[in-house]
Length: 82
Image (cartoon, rainbow, N blue to C red; front, side, top):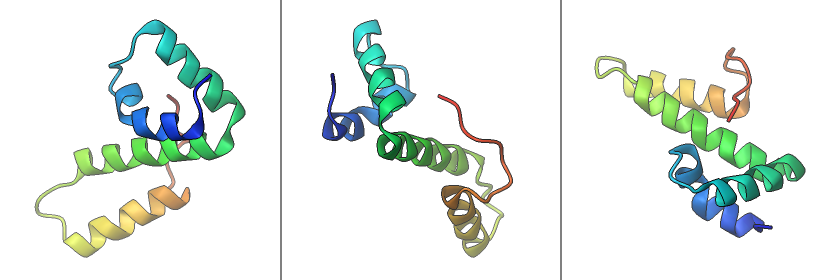
């Protein structure tokens, strides 16, 4: 099974679906047991989604505040699923 360091090093590949079946299965098993890594992957996913949704005309301070809200979990969005 993968350890926490391997999870954090490969979280972007996991979210981008760039892993083979076995490696993806190992990630999922670890995430089912480790709330810290699960939170890390959720935060990374939220960051990616927020950056994708940013609009150029939106003030930088407002964007930063929205990102902080999402990362804290009080952004009003449903929980992230991976």
